[in-house]
Length: 533
Image (cartoon, rainbow, N blue to C red):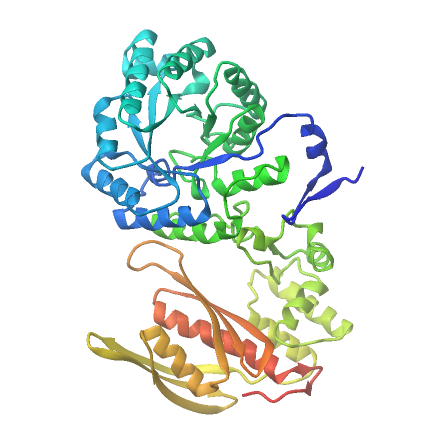
């Protein structure tokens, strides 16, 4: 038996032992995803989304392929109700759901928002009944039945959660589930409200409940012990057919199960399909991070900045030979790109690959010398950027550095009833070039002016703007992909981070042009192969 296998048409490589262990287990072919970023995710401390932000995120979730969007808690405030109503009226394909307590007033508020479904919750654990609600189990059962009946009588799809379900006596859970099924509940959710389950217990717990439930089961897991994703997958193993998630794992306290991790886990470990377009996950992750102001940790699984970054020489060598050696999936599957970082742990292959991006090819001895200098530099605590790496490489091969494109001056004018106009002065190979141009906005005008100064053959193939922090003074990251209309093989990336969108875009363009310049020049061991611009 091979120790690894590839799931067909996915580019995901996982352990064969997963498939062997689960091969005899009956699991659903597909699992629905209920995304609660707009409700539970917004309950993340210090996060508050405007109605406009909620609509933007809902539209992105809809394009992502989320089955059910929990848009909010309408009874909470007029603003919340407005946001839920706007999401419900956006013409999305996803089912739009509103959260409600087991109260007719809450359900009325949801009905006023024209949602498709309601997610009704009522605490059932002993501690909640005695300390918070101060009602008996019989009263809780009756409240649950009344609420579900009310929702069904008003034409809603109803999902019901026994809040703190994993700390509720199983016998009482079965009583409530039996009673709400008798009045037509459509789905039943099992919440691990304070994240206290283990995967093994979660599988057995869900399986026990499933014996007495005829409607689809869902699981809603929190991450207080870092187990939310594992418990969600374990719940599916026990018979759940729906998982509640949030983008980036946002949520109360330590957060909820992260959608990106749950979806890829279902696919990789169980070969279970969802309706999620995984290639859009990184984009939605960035959007949610931007609008909530909650940065994604670089080591975050699946969508973190470092998820497909490699520095170690051994790892880079392996990935360059065959990506599956150190990557369990291809980065493009989740909308990411592979990157190689040059630093203390880098080897010859990482440095060689990075220099090739700039059109530089060094022999083995030269590469070893560059690597030695890089390691010495990095060990002193300094971070080596691409310009410094190139300077080291040119010094090693005994050649002056390739002509750099430097921004000497830059101005842009824009305003009401005024065509945006930009002027740049670029120093190219010791020669100053001045150019002005217009555009549909200040960034477009700036890009056009730069192209006019360098070459009209330059093509802006891609422009991407991301906010790194929140607020009006947010840092942004701009990425540009440049090409050459005379040579389809020439391509380069430029990135820059700053607080001003326009100047950051110009800096990214200049970085991308420098890379394109070196490639166009085609320096190979000190010999010029092609003319530059």
